[in-house]
Length: 460
Image (cartoon, rainbow, N blue to C red; front, side, top):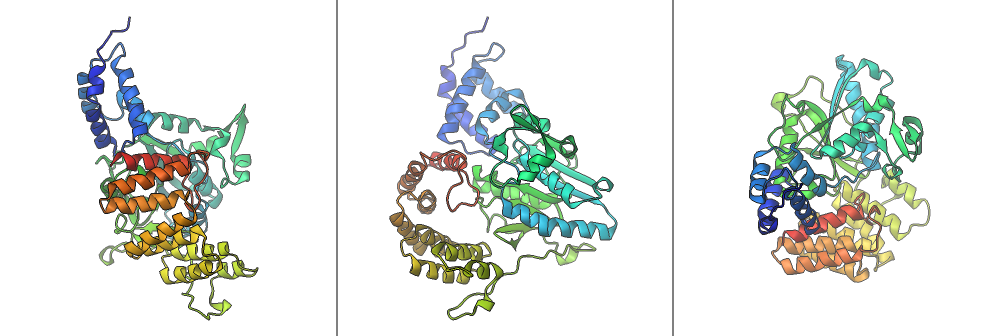
């Protein structure tokens, strides 16, 4: 017989539980997550083997996140949105530049070992994608010692990852067709990953906001590369900065950090050196002059195209510029060239292409939005806000423009205006499919954007 408990005390102390959860996990709970937490707490409080809410709070305070009580809560507040070979630009950079250079260096040194860490791996698609890529790049992989660590805070996600059984949803637009054909076998309406790939990955439970890493005990030291994409968007800036600092310590000299395009950069990753590749920027830990490695890795970055003043000849354009302009140029072509320049932080060239795009179509909302981001990166805040308003004028349902403008208002302490624009952003995507990629966002899905907006609104 289930013991009857007065659960009203749980409701009265919810704010205390929310604060405890945020402090232990680093996750900022939005109202949607808070409602799920409230249900989970009531379920725990009414279980036959659980004491009243005051004792439940004490139990959570005393137990580590590996405890079943915590895992029931973590299961309802974490987002496992991922798929195989997500973000083609980053995997292209790994395939064509970073990994070949790293492999060549180790061959020259006679040290055939590599160490990778996927932090916040969710259900495993990301580390398994890296494992497949390594198999393709290393014909003599059996002669190598490869550590591929994958960690997450959610034990249920890790268990699903270990099984290596995936539904069609894990194979989307950027997943090469031959990957599923070569490395998976069909089981009913699912796909089982080949055990050769599964056995390459070591999964483990780890809380990124803890001080448990880097450490020898959990294998989080001397990493050649750390991949942590679309994880810290759910943390506050200070937590993200601390995580970046720990990642820096966990990396080898000249090691790499790969983060999502939607995550904060500049000041958060200032201890790293930004490296530019086609349509993406990755971060490298550069050794100081006092501690240079014997054989530094030579990485060939994508060349930065020269600035394009008026009257420049076609020979001065980058190869991508030539490709796009071989046909009659459209506004989208000029926008794409501007986006490429902006990704490489070549602001003057980005402005030049945007000028061309705006002359061709003064009401192209994406042009004004990208120009706003360029000016924001150049710390021209007033001009950036004006351009965001212009983008919204051209497209009142431009969700990302509303979000960015709301973020700028929030920085100024204008919380009412920030909330208004974040609510507009939510309304703009209410009819969109959860896994649809948000326009002008690289790889931010509607589902992730909703969670991000809810998190920001919860801070007001």
